[in-house]
Image (tube, rainbow, N blue to C red; front, side):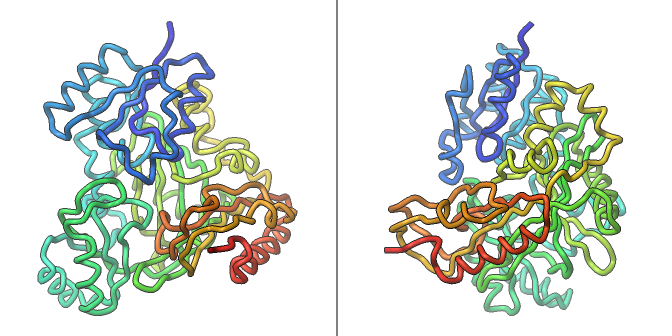
Length: 419
């Protein structure tokens, strides 16, 4: 009997899933969580990958129940989110149809950044001091009470560092607050409240995982090297894939496994960002979906699998996947993910990335660089970077040399000619 997978919002990295299921003979159904697809995701959507497409027309419980009834006709074996906007709806539909997933009752812990931290605190894990409010006066009073400058100001439920800003005084706080409250964020949601958190000091990391029936497989540990940007927060410089074991990695993995359980993640992928502080790891946030904006073929070159292929395997071959739980991953090659950053704005006259970077010994691939005629913006978050470069090689020294070369090209403005 043919099996069926339903993917909610198969955008960004989630667009890579349906072809893997179709290759194994599964029917693929797409559920769109809103009438319009957020602009930042539109280019990645591949409707031809799906046999059927359903759209949630209104974000109310009646419309969701109607959608669940329509979906029952296709009898999906699993319902999973493709990207962040699909997490909550996938949980709801999975609960209504009785498919293995994550409970809709705990969805808020995986989408609302305030609830996420409070769940960790209640479970005895290190968590961030925080408050949430729709009042600038209350926000300012909280900072005074905790003597907390600098503070991090962010939307409750966006992604990609959208709207995130470090504030060092009342003026910056007021500006950041007004730029968030009442505005529509990158996920197409209106920011009804603003989250304030203490700023964590330390080194940032990424821990990706895939879970099956409450057991968590850690698929990758990356160092997540950032730099601070004026009037924003941190933007990514590079992500370096680390060996599974190490003094820092062991602490991160242990903490992350506990956090995933406290956040109710039982099935499917997760993407966690953490800070290693002087007192140990602290979760910044976890997303119950795959890491966005990755070149999963580059990860396969380094590990033999990727977050995408492991997520598919959890559903396609659960027995094989379960066999990996006790086996830590092994690095076959070194891997850097280098995020370009622009200090200039303008229209691209010529993109020279492929020509110049192709000469580097460790160059693997480039993604999301702008075409001729597109605009480049000053980089303040994930959505405004002008491209991502993957470097993969057996020798770490070669990658480090090529990384330095990329930053030099970037500084000289040779990667893009702007009109």
